[in-house]
Length: 406
Image (cartoon, rainbow, N blue to C red; front, top):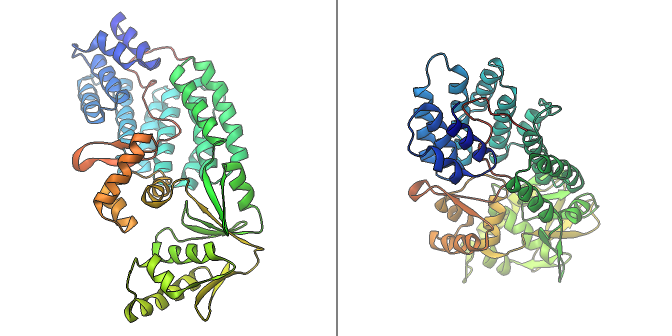
């Protein structure tokens, strides 16, 4: 590795893509192409990054197997950063095994962490947890330990285990400090701050209070029936019924929960669930069908009984009923709830899930983007919206040479 390539690699490892490009922007040799691809990825130019990495992989000779393997692994990481999640988990395993066989344990470990990130983005927590359990971070570079602990923290956060997440973030912060990379330290500290910030609103009758993740964890462990609008689920302790794919049923249950212990009139339910200003017999018939489906879906946790005016919710074993909703209500809050799973969404898909027009979804997304609550990935038809992750993927280890890693 010549001095300019080595210097550019160090700049990338320190999170300085512009500094790296100043040194190798005009070069077309394979190592420089690979570094330029990594720099473009760090700058968010994912498509250009993938093209450069492919060119570099093709330009390396047949004896440079390690360099080619690193480029292929880096391309997989860029695909995950761009929310192109079509590659199956087996591809990440194969890339990691290839690096492992060539003696590059650090990058093999890193590639497996990228596979974990893919699983998290797809909402496959069990898959991600299994993959992490197979990794042994002892003796790994501090950067990898920081990423490993961040992944564990994100799984704990998704499962509303605040105490576990706090411990994982503390270990991640220690490892991040050891790397000396300011951007990584700032990312972990941001995650720690968010852990103690209000993450939802709790509705109990007429009272509305902000709750942190620690308080939400305590709620889920209590004897209350929790209607979780953040994940569209109904919970009592360890029992849970997901209504994420059945928005009408969830809206019925949420409306009844907000009115508990009272009932909700049929007209009010029709107006809220079907958004009908002038209810007719067709709406009433449809409401009876949907209420029957909701009653069947949550029968293990609560019942829905007909009253003279409408319907009422009655928990079976729970002592009381509470509703947990996103910090922001309306379309913006619903979008945040949908993005909380980590999956990338197109504007049209969000509009369809919300039952609203694309223009309504676009207005809400613009407001959330300005506040930093969501961010776009891609352009034009390929644009997708995601919630900011705990940590972004910006390749710093997959470098085409023997750069020492702290």
